Structures are given as C-alpha cells and as structure tokens.
Length: 228
Image 1 (tube, rainbow, N blue to C red):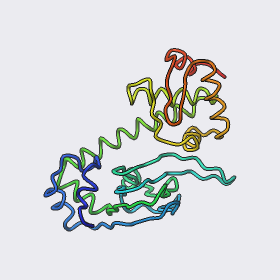
Image 2: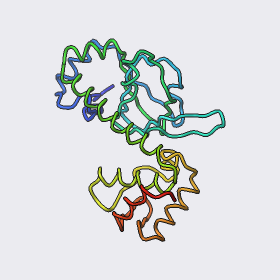
Image 3: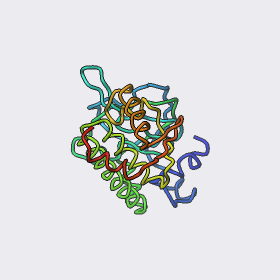
Image 4: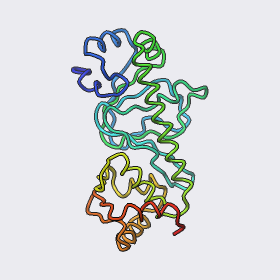
C-alpha cells in the first residue's frame, strides 16, 4: 500500500518511529492489508486469533451476540486503533467477541511471529504495547464498574463522569450515536432517551444533538449513589 507509513504513524504501537525505521521493521514482515465492507464480519467469536489488526481507515466494532439475538457493542474503534493484541499473546488465542466493520474500512494485519520479531528488534514497540495493554485494563475496570450499577441513571451518570474526566469540560462531545451509547451501557435505546430527558428535567444535564452539558456536577456524582 502506497504511503502506508502515513496511514499507520499515528497508531500508538509505532509512535515516535521515523518512516525509515518503520519501513525497515516491516520490510521482511508477514503482513497484509485488507479492505472490508460495512457490517462485514472480520472475526467471529471463538475464531483463532493469529494476527494483530490495526485500522487504517474506517471504523470497527467489537460486539457480543447472545442467543436471544440481542447484541452489545463492547468497543467502537476508529483509525489507528488496534484489536487482537491482547488475545494474540494469551494461552487461548481465540476471539472472545465478534469483530465487525462499522463502516467501509481498511485494516493492516500482521502475524504474531512477525510482530514478536519487531518487538525484539525495536524495544520501543514492546514498551508501547505494554502501555496500550495497561490502558485497556483501566478501560475494562470502568466497564466492570458500569455493570455494577443497577439503574439506567447510574449507568448514564458513570458514563458521563468518565467522559468529563477525559474531556476536561462541562460540555461533553459524544462520539457515538444514542443507539451505540445504549449498546455500550447495555440498556434499551428508548429507556436511555427517556432517562436522559428525566435528568434534563431535574436540571442535572442539558443536551443538544451530540453535546451534553453538565449543569450540576455534584448532582451528577450523587446519581452514582442513588437507586433510581
């Protein structure tokens, strides 16, 4: 792929590597670049994971499907994001969830052996990988924390507090649709909208399109300790 470095240089795995360093590292590596269509299944649950995937263009969603037909979006990944890196070095080496193209996407895949060789040659890549894994553990902790909340209001409050800490502003820019947000929180879409409206009526938040304004931060925090 022409200008591969320009597409992949923002991936945290290869941060601070020059184009020359990157091209040298992948010169003899076993990798492929694959284009997928929207809603195309990239990997199904329990498929063997043999490669690390890096999104060059488009979006990818990690979904959990249940026998009832219900699905929950575990993660929504955009350009420069990675998937498969946790499973690749585990004992099981099977996808725990289904990976689906959220839009037309271009994905860079590299085999475990080639990636391991690169980590040995360029130790900064291994350091970057450990940093990525550490951050994912923190994200997982937040997801587990969200599951511990019983009410929809608590789940919404926890989600908005996380975004507030990340964005450092009372005006929260939502990067996902209401439907995706409902899937992330594991609640019905209509129930999410209804509770957001209730929180607006209670003067805790206000919202317009993809922006949520936190009106009363203390009240929002208090929601985490209320059963409503």
